[in-house]
Image 1 (cartoon, rainbow, N blue to C red):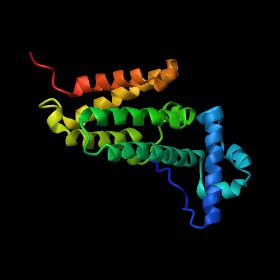
Image 2 (cartoon, rainbow, N blue to C red):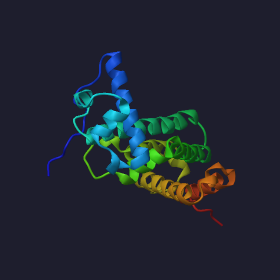
Image 3 (cartoon, rainbow, N blue to C red):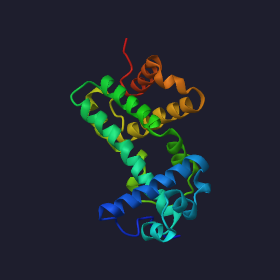
Length: 208
């Protein structure tokens, strides 16, 4: 099956057009939060946004295009959290940077937890651009961090594999916490334990 591209029909250039697109996306986000992907229709979104269906179709020819744009915007916000953590801890040791990664992950789950869950679990498998996948871009950030600290991690470990596993480990723990014990995200000892687990995987085993 050929890949389908879910891009805007046209880019808004004038301020009024940008405002219209933003209002439509906010309406789409509201419906995603309340009803999930299955509840989104272009007619519902247009009504919620207070625009005509024709105005919506000028930019979003289908609900898939609208949701893809919402996903791009959301994951762009997430990437900024991780990039900020990387920049803020430049020059620090691996344990401090590992904690910054865990904290950025927690902040990502706090950003818009309902929308985050819908975008990660409730969407059908439709094709979007590769860089729409936050896991890919975050893993690239982790790869860069681990490469900065290659001398602090186990000999022979693949940086790409370690980045993927580190990301998957932290994400699995945090998804479980959000579902079953959301209060733990505010617990400093919980954060410390996640960091210790991550470092136990990355750092050489103690000798003697």
